[in-house]
Length: 290
Ligand code: OGA
Ligand code: MN
Image 1 (cartoon, rainbow, N blue to C red):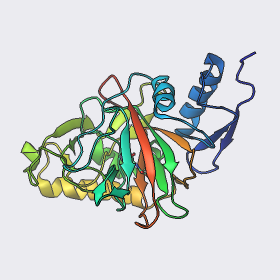
Image 2: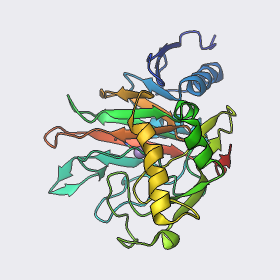
Image 3: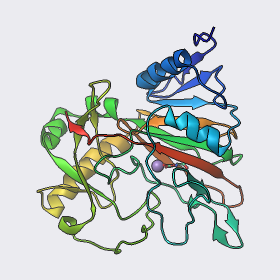
Image 4: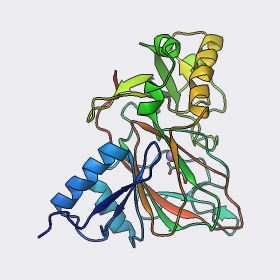
């Protein structure tokens, strides 16, 4: 009987993250097993499945269990799309004939939520390690529920009721996406406006919703006031303590809840190949204020 009993949930012991053992994602995942995955995801925000062997079809099939997929984000010029699918975002530092085969290169990535510059950002991102480096290129995750809960009361009061514009023009490596100007005034900058504190639609918990620091603007404040309040809020994140780092092995699948976590990548050694496939599961609704 497919009752999900072969699945084991192993918490990371950190502020978020758990490993799911005993589940092969290459075939059909039965409803009982998937129910266990969903519960573990709500409990731990980031899940890792090791030792998977997925082709693109299998990755898309598993990703769609969580909901309809969003198309890939707009890439910088010269970064190609996956040749067969606009729902698989190729993240890679590999060059072929001096040209990148995927996005985000070798640089460190800032803390971010994926595609929060959209009116309806993805609820989940799924990242699959095809080729992974021996060292470096870890992906760090941050719990935005506990980040909010531990925010000093004065900061909670200062951000209450405020909304932030999330910049659409640059990716998490700081590269300009195709079709945008390098500079904008905050009022004119392309992006979506979301509350700084949101209520998670499934768990009902309050979470900080910061997006990313570069080019963020708290609507209605002067640039200087906005920068000061954002810097204070991000200083709380940079203090750490609510994070967990994924060290990649080939065959790892990691899913994160994009509504209540941040992530960032450490630097990569250009001499070590890294090839990842990412999908993004549509959120279906704008973030709601807590
Ligand atoms: C992403 C991302 C981090 C990484 O795919 O959204 O931020 O470690 N990737 O490649
Ligand atoms: Mn990302």
